[in-house]
Image 1 (cartoon, helix red, strand yellow):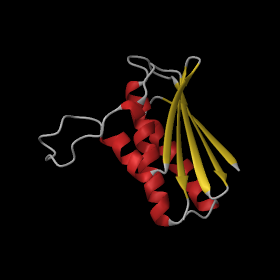
Image 2: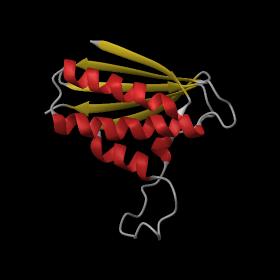
Image 3: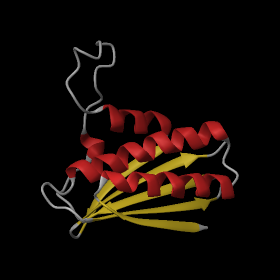
Length: 136
């Protein structure tokens, strides 16, 4: 099964993302704990694209494809923004207090912890981030 969501780089679109993910998890029988983990990880990635992929440009595409296959759920997030590989970012030092840590970096850190696998590739003029979660 495959479902897709097409939004633009506007934070107001997060409500469409939340509704989409809730319907996907519900229709595929994803348990509440896993659904929360998916929501947190994928929302972090979507917010990063919305906020940073298209500096100064509104109304740009952000596409999310989700596929349920053989006991895993696969999210593919695609944008046409500036080239950026979030998987190359070092993990933040979470032993430091919040006030001591530099801003940023927690989103991909959380996604790495919550998802089974994360891959990035630049395909033509597109960033493609794939996040896979093995289901219990």
